[in-house]
Length: 256
Ligand SMILES: Nc1ncnc2c1ncn2[C@@H]1O[C@H](COP(=O)(O)OP(=O)(O)OP(=O)(O)O)[C@@H](O)[C@H]1O
Image (tube, rainbow, N blue to C red; front, side):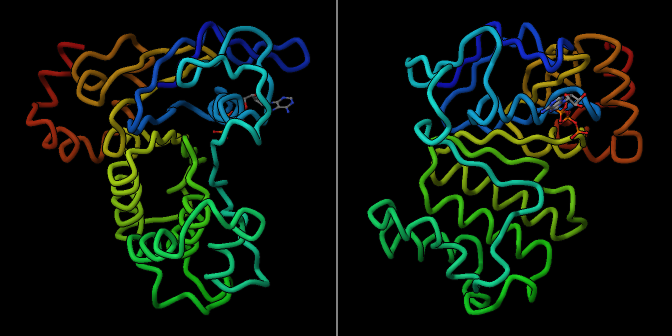
């Protein structure tokens, strides 16, 4: 279980995040959703340990890790631009982190990940010979071989579209389920958050607007911001989303 208690962060005396309280159970997929500049990446970096909190606590597995350095937390992130090594082939990219820590993953662990992510045909290719979706899968494999205790993903789908986007979504779900891995994803896209996650954390103006499962958020938006932000952006795809929950858009908008 990961828990944030009364977390606050400011930059240059400007409060970016405040009153952040949340619990994430082991194996859950949680999306952090909100408009540009609301503090999503800052929150991800606080959890990762890349950025220090000003006030409040971060608890993981009942231990206070608020001041534990990033390297000792054992969490791992896939950055938006993948940050792969262009001079190495796919296999070497995937196994790079094992060079100094060979005991972390066995040859079978690596093989299983390569198979899960469908990377067998690409292992000897260089990074610039890959599509966006293939690069994302390599970045996921490279992070997963290090067996992170929590997987953090910053806008993992934003550079992808159509079928590729759907297939990466499925891979993320498979990884979280197969490895029972807590996965925290930053996104600005409500449809992505609602279709990918067990829970969605909606942030506005540096505070939590709502934290709940996709159905709760759609059927009982906590306030006007959630209603507007979610429903306006879902305008085109709303019927597909509602079909997922067997609901009726009109009823929910009226109820909200
Ligand atoms: N290192 C920093 N120093 C000063 N201000 C920062 C720093 N990092 C982020 N900020 C500010 O904090 C606010 C939140 O930034 P953050 O990147 O967390 O937002 P975001 O929700 O991820 O935005 P986007 O969706 O556009 O990536 C912004 O106003 C940003 O300018």
